Amino acid sequence: MLLAQARTETVLTLRNGEQILLTVLIPVALLLAMGLMDVIPVPEPRVGSATARILALAVISSAFTGQAIALGFDRRYGVLKRLAATALPRWLLVAGRVAAALSVVAVQVTIIAVVALLMGWRLPSAIGVLWAVVLIVLGTLSFGALGVLLGGALRAEIVLALANIVWFGLLLVGGLSLGVDSLPTWLATIVDALPSAALAQALHDAVVDGAAPGVGHVTVLVVWGVVAGGLAMKTTKLG
Image 1 (tube, rainbow, N blue to C red):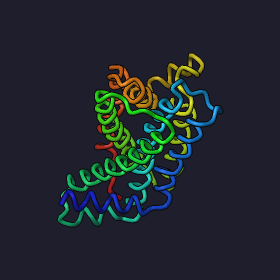
Image 2 (tube, rainbow, N blue to C red):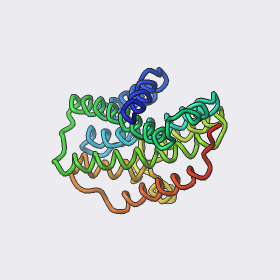
Image 3 (cartoon, rainbow, N blue to C red):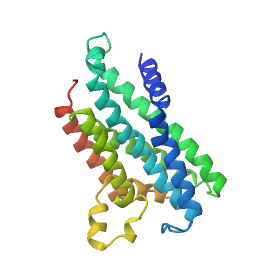
């Protein structure tokens, strides 16, 4: 049942044109721009650094923005109430969404990795690849919890607007397009505590340096995920 539920959620996501734009086309376009054009300051090796940031953006796009909007509109149209009234266990509904999010992220990561390799990115060591997988799963769970927190508590129209605003905010000054080191000191201190910057910097350690990420960055991701998950359990509504 879990496999069937996850497959259904994944297919629904991948058939949505807006989701494809948000989760695949925009990240790939930004990867090309950041990796090939000297417009945004990106550390050397340029393609590798851009790949780390775009992988983080892909996770945020799918796990946070996509999940929040989908959940908000599922609540609006009564999809969750109808599913809750069936024999489908609630844990299976949640597990199916998590598995679908991980599946979509896996598709994103594969596409981005292929494009990056064609641009000249070199695969890191086995340790780096292993850490990258761990960080992508951890980032998906943490940003998924934030997406459920937002999409499960507010009206669909507010979720749609707020999720996109947060996505643009994180892209511009959340440690993705501009690295933390290039920001003013006061702003860098704030951004360094955001999960977007933590994920991007941790992925940089893994996919560029082939090394384990800093404990601080992993801790930031875990704390955001645990706090958001706890709040989501108390505030999420079915309708």
